[in-house]
Length: 296
Image 1 (cartoon, rainbow, N blue to C red):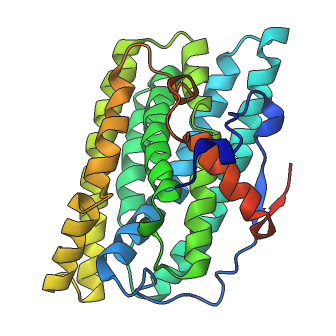
Image 2 (cartoon, rainbow, N blue to C red):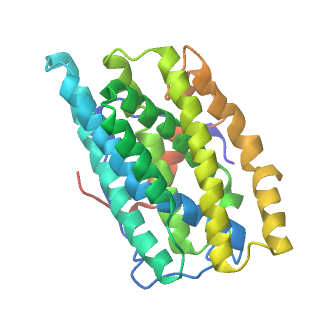
């Protein structure tokens, strides 16, 4: 990894730096069943994550929209309101792209159960008239998880080095935008009076639910794929989570930082790591400007 001085270490400071983009990757022609360098486990794991996004992203959009209705209409909140609108634009684009992605997975014979599990939980929460602050806390928790995974996607080239170039671009574009907007739901939650105790409770819930659903959907994908019981599949899973630069080693610490009372998603710039997540996102978006088109 090049030194931090080679990349501008600037986090977005205002709404103008949150850009809504259209991804210039064509998924209509489909992609290989084992698009991740022939690796069945990694292909089906990331496919499982994609299956969660259309419903999940819509839930995030709904939660910030509901929260925005409670935000005082004052000059001090103009910047946050505009940032939230741009967040919605980015998430809507993610939802659209992953819907196209998932349509190809259906053609391959995979069955998306995750969307139904998530929909039932969301509908249950809304039927109980849960305060919008709680839905924002859930969104903030998931946004932290995705931002941590996004950092690994951009920081560790080995995570996608052997993948189909189109899929590399898709996942890294998504990762860069998740890092860009990772603080939006968190900031809105705090502006609406959200407290630390409930933030931590909902984070524990989100991590548990995400882990269970990701495992269940990945197993279902591998079963439909006919590779669930192959030794190579399980060996790949072990290496993916516990090998060098594995998820367990690289993500656990950053995930747990969410529990700190003084935590903020963008606080890394004050901690001066070798290279920040925002710097990684800026570099990828700059180096791959021909892969996306500015919408707003």
